Length: 204
Image (tube, rainbow, N blue to C red; front, top):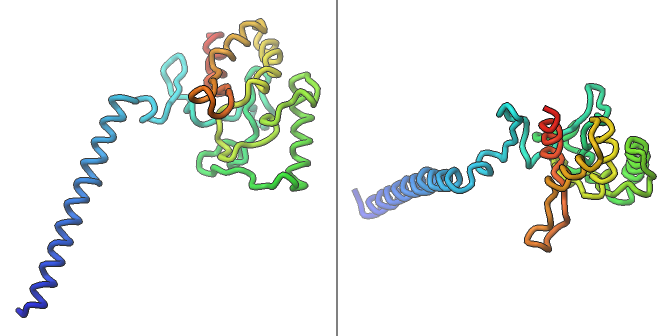
């Protein structure tokens, strides 16, 4: 065996040992450590931020929106409605996306006008009272949050449909509202998934 062959063999052996070492360190140990830390310090977030009903059954995630409609796709009046979704048939986690339409796209403009009229009629308000997020999808198509303004125009409708007082419903909205991150980042939001679950539990 000449020197060149021995050198190549040593190089290959070093490469194989290095790959094995880093596979164990980064592929196994690092993963186990991060999983352990996540389960210890932030178990809810590490497991998908699952929300459960009063019986303890999982009904969704607080990070992913849902549709609250009947089998024909008509919005249910007893639930707060989320913003539109361009993900598949609506809030499809396997097809996360926005519409990718530009602000001057004729189809988008027509869809917004139609949605605005529908939202206004459904909630008994004027079209001028309908906020932007009620008629436009989020970039992911999965956002479970709406603006406090959109929640506000739905309060009376939900209260009437459930036989609750407006004050009761408004209090639940306040309980499931989030302020700006760190006090200045983003906008205040209301989590529709958690809010609707709270409404169902209120009547149980």
